[in-house]
Length: 478
Image 1 (spheres, rainbow, N blue to C red):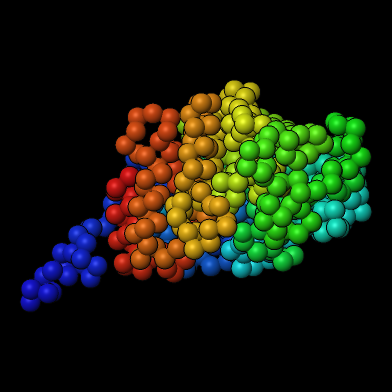
Image 2: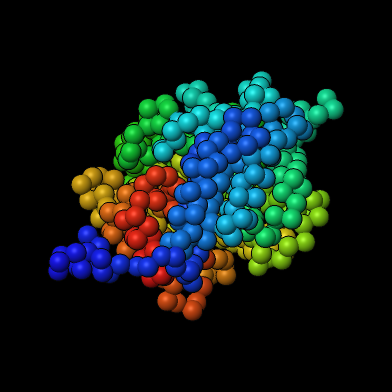
């Protein structure tokens, strides 16, 4: 009898039982939908009744809404022909439950990356034009990434229109966002509270430097992806270099000190003489990072144009933009920051080099230009510096990295949001919730408190009774 009473009050975990439903907390919590939530033709929800049941459950635990990928490869199957019926159906379902949507403009493929369980390639007409014109990211050895278009495609007028003409990649992005916003109608700024603007592989503002589909294994530094014709043309115009310098990684599973350009200075030697802080290495890495940030600015400009063309009048409080930046936490404690450098985040060419501050500066400028809030969305929020203690040569330091990003956001008055990098068992992961709560800093009245958190990934495990209890504890705690 006493055991039954204890269980009813505290549950089998020994924690106090929380009566559901609970209200959303001070910091909104969202759940990312499964990758295949949308039907293959884009016209409908794939598992509508199951999704409804899951949404009702997580709403009772205080979640604010969901994040969903709006796949380019599904929703624009031919140039200028759009199918957003499934997204509209999702919005109607969310509206009926008083839940919100973070909509992701997914200008990248699904498949071949960490956590990808299904495959949705880029539109065939996009891949054909990108391949024919050598506008897909390419390595020195000829590895081609089909995850997204190269940023060098931004101003190349080689992509089709519905009338048989051509347009640039930037115009494609703007057209897609414009038609999406028009199709969603009154849901924009009511049901849809965020438009995350896809910037590259996995939707992130980075280069596809670590390719699982081509044999990458953690904690390899990755490779530089700048040998497509468009990137080489941009490099030469900006630096007069005809190609990237020698000494960059050719094996994406190499460690920093195995790579001549990233090798640390010997004890007592001049740090300024390393390959990444001198000569062509320094020039290249700074150009590589600057080109990425300029791409981010240009795509955000298209998002602003889309909002205007679609006649969106929702306030910044009701609809914000966001940009996702990858939490590349391995080799952060190496002076070359090689993993980040290969992905386009320059934190190595001088003691003051700080890619995250440069990105935050760009986002702050875009916020003023577009007169709309833009979230700096960062990953790996659940990780600790000792998460990878069993692999000391990884030189991993996610907490230090998050602190660097947070400082960049504070310095530039940018709101910070986040995601966990890897899925975890919601019902049995106190360690993850404790760490995320620590990073959210909801107690703070300052800019260091996070704007929101999105958890990977809504499924059966999220809606088990014990999982809902943990979610409710987390939501009410923050």
